[in-house]
Length: 529
Image (cartoon, rainbow, N blue to C red; front, side, top):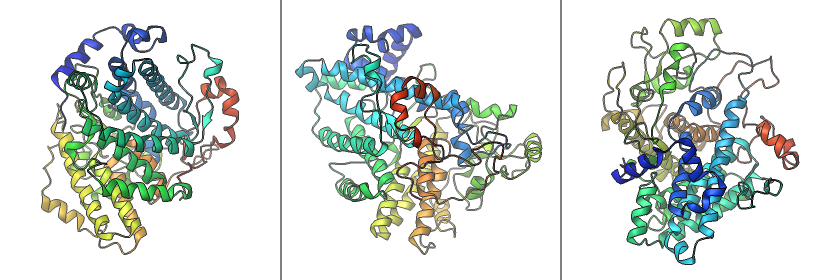
């Protein structure tokens, strides 16, 4: 894994030793932004959404525990009224953090555009990198909500504080995708020509805690993000020709368009000192001891791993303390009383605490080799190149196993379960040869696409939940049974989030134009299955 340079830690420690109000003065209040710089604002921008990349309480306990992780039955829970409506507290928080981040990005744009031509030329890498990071976050939001304010949003400071003029219209999600794909294609070419002066390289390495100032990593991030976005829209008629052409260009020209190929190249935020604000706190997953159902296994998901002899099983799960080593999950069709009894009796497996809950050095995952492999596998499958599809599919498993071994290796607390045994190459080969995993055993393209979908489900699980839910909906290859909630109009899991109430109220005129589409059961434009 990448290691943040010591100087980065020192700078961040100094930066965050200030009080919260000091930080807001430096990075949020538009009236003080003239006193900052491109370099510092870049870090302020990155920091704004760190709690939705690193593992933190609000995202996992308030947002994901009661929504995405349930909708994919990665976790199990007691069925209850209103369980299929994304809670407003979680949705509002996600929305607000995104627009806080977008505001920081607009301030970076403002500072950059007001700089001299010489400084813009010297520090162009800060703007290019910021766009990649911002478009990644924007894709997540578009995939959650559909139409969102984006192209003209976040410009209150740029509009000199004119609130009314800053109420942005909602952009159609396909329009947002088109804009970002155009931008990312241009950025990919621009990054090939970047040459940094020593002083700029030094500053970029200090301020960039995502890739430590490594331009090659930003190139891989940019092109891997393009691959992700193009894969998501490749079946949409208006995008299919473009997606196939550009994916082919990316994969066919690794010198100009490198992507993440192995776990040494993963795009992630490493935690090197839990005492700094760049840290992970996954302890919410231990709240199941209090009955919150944040980390107990869903039976169907657990069956996928147990029944196939998945070599990642002991890294991801630990058996219930009284289960005699057996991996039991929660049957989502079971009576709530029976579920509560099984949990209370210590029979239900939960996420391995040494890997997850107690691992304060769990990295903030952005894009990794296994997911890139799976996008490759899908592209080659649909292009008719079965040999390359198989190779990419099998490499995804190899990289995913190594990914979990690496995550576990940095833990500060191994937890109560026995330490997992590192899988051997033979273990992985045996798994890949299994009847329900083998590429060659699948006889149709549809069956092979299901294999890809199931590997995404397992690899992402709760550690990349937003990407998991998007791919889960898009591919629609995993059938799950839910108890209908007849106490509510939303009887089954939704396929999107609603636009939060405050946005509906304060951006009323613009919201009215898309209100008819703002329905929990209205699929996203790429959700065709």
